[in-house]
Length: 545
Image (cartoon, rainbow, N blue to C red; front, side, top):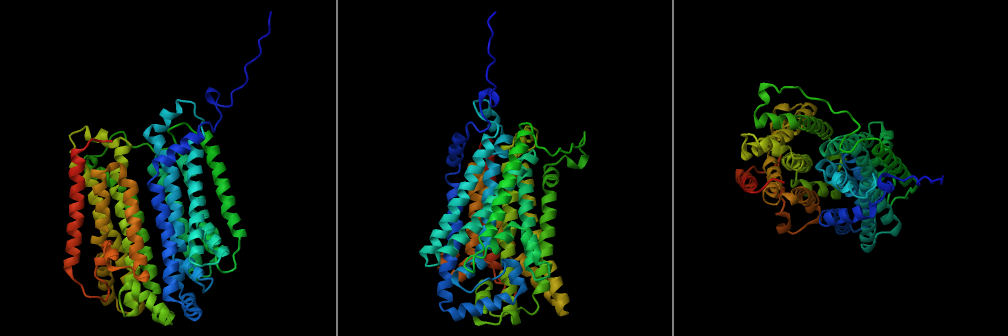
């Protein structure tokens, strides 16, 4: 009897290894993101380059930069918002001004990239279809991380190259690029873990976004001068600051980001191997067997889906407004140089320093509220791609009613956020100055004046949803990023007025302190209404999917 040798044990399903097909999926991901990722790279690199260029023109002498840095170090409010100032060179001031913002942008780029090519594709059924071929179990995760990590590396090199071309020291330029790129690296790995924990792309984005928000909050508390400076070392965003580009670089801090990113990447791989396809490791909470009567309308369902997000955003805006109002007293004494005052008054558009301070901060809150409006409006696209809209619209529910229910929450929610921030800021500042009756309505009105501009940005996302649904998510967020950069950096860069006019926030009255006019707010509201109407008409006429 002839002995038959046992076949060799396969490395994975169908004889494949866990990473079989990673190269092909990486190429596919790059092709799918051929517009999305270059836009992110351009915007983030341009933010660094344009800020460095503006500082060179605004503060040409070492003495003027030293005065600015000294005034900034004496203001705990600005330190909490933008981070500490470690030097008075153009590079160090650039890192202080936009380094943290660009690091957050790199983190968002990493989060969106990883979840788009893992959990979102899995939820849509694309990975199950591709996985029926010769494809390793870990290939999709590996490909998404290769793309995300590669883009973070490219971003770091672009920032370094742009800074060197502007005449900044090469060592500091490389450190600044590394600090920002490594922030994206860490949160791409966070997104990889969150994609294994939750059963939906929206849940994964929520977990990763919550981790980013927590990191920002921890860093803010650590940098606020409250005696808890050690908290900044507990945040990956704090590590980006403490690498100290252009101020005696501490390269060993980069090892923290590399180590944490590597650990999270390994954890994501282990978790991915231990869960079922299409399921998350965190158990989903079963709903009721029968829905209550109040949940039978499209608006009630939209509220049920979005109420948690709105409540958390409102809480964050209220806390932020209270912090800003409490720390505003004495801002004039803290900004004790002409350069620092010019910096704030140009951004706030006012000559009175306290009004300029509040106007600048409320402008930032307006741009942030626009982000909520975009996210809430694009919930429609998420419901559509996840095929829940198709099931709902198979009932007598009309398309316009369903879409309008989510848009109502986006529109009203944006106003609620800014109202909460203005109310808490006015109350806090009024209590500090003993004049609540005057300050509360002033700051509440200034915050609510930002609402129509935020609606315009949300309207752009709605128009894309109805007319070009495949571009709604990437172009909608890119439009928000461009507007935010124009709004926050345009005045200090002294961009041409026609460029500034692209941002709807340019047309908002400069409040508090400025002249209030209804006309621009009315026109912004009309533009937002037209964009939303165009999106609804397009959605009514096009096919789902």
